[in-house]
Image (cartoon, rainbow, N blue to C red):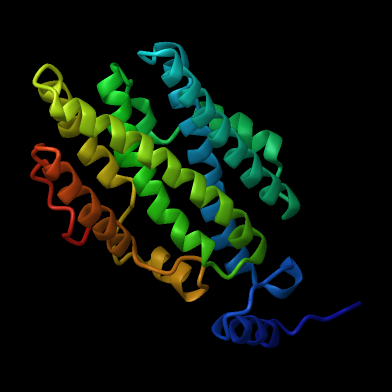
Length: 249
């Protein structure tokens, strides 16, 4: 019977993390590290799958054939991102079939709101995919090697989705016929997407940072997102809602 010295294991793990090396096997991590890792990877898998399903109706609902193709490609990307995450989870012993079944019943709350119009869709695209891009940056630099490497391509594709949202928000804001509609969409989605970053300064988030599974506090990520979106939206002639996004939760 092999007796594992848990203290020595933790010290070796933290030394590797502190030196910037990647962890590659569950044999070298503590139960606390594994719990934090699974929590974050499951959350991302959930959001990737939810994102795909949220966009599906707009393959048919897009205003042009070119946009139907664009939306189909975005859905394809999101499904592939979800598959990549479920593959990572499968390799660390998660029952992904059960997880996916549960995901179908328990979508992220931001997706419970119906996307009612093309203006709604592109504003959600603009705000939510940019939020995801900021969160993925932390994951791409994380201490778990398999997740970090998988995020490099996913992050690039997420920013391509952001550019799609930027193009359409700018276009709709520039037209007198659609400016009010896109402003209404901004007013609706801004506070909802703002909440997806989670609480700033939480004990859980500090543990994620301790293990270098996240690089920044939730509030720092939220502020980075806000500092990008606000000048862009104001540059399009839109009014950013009066949401105190920089206050600690």
